[in-house]
Length: 177
Image 1 (cartoon, rainbow, N blue to C red):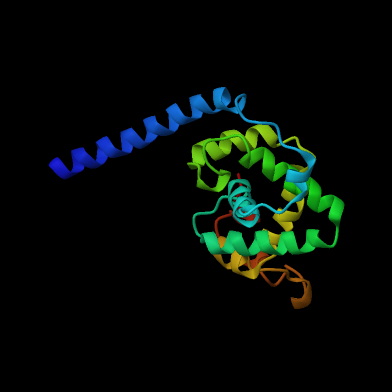
Image 2: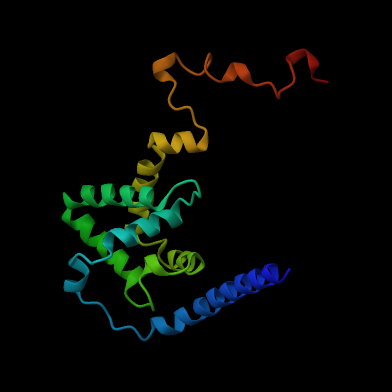
């Protein structure tokens, strides 16, 4: 019993710490020095980590390891390398998440990350990353397996013989009253 009480106490402390930290962030944000254009254009040391953490907040699945999100973020950053304007906009957005807080975005607790995402979810970089990120994540066959999606059926003749004939939870046409 003592171990269970200690564990509960630790969990409560972690929650309270997250709430307190979340309450402090708006006040600390005003103390940060403004970023200059040169800082926004230079690749930050945690660009990939921040991109991966943001992708995990956008598409949270417990079944996916952090390495999966890191791989998807890497693919996105590789695509952006061919489009300097888009890359600069993405870096500007990452700077909004990383620059003025007590720790880099990727190192903050999930509850605080969600609050920060809510502050930037109307930014152009966010919309672009959300759209392309959804495509990168949900077109991966590993995700299909984890979510129970059988994949496209076009190459197998459609869905008629691949899924619609096994619905056993619907009543038959003559059984409905």
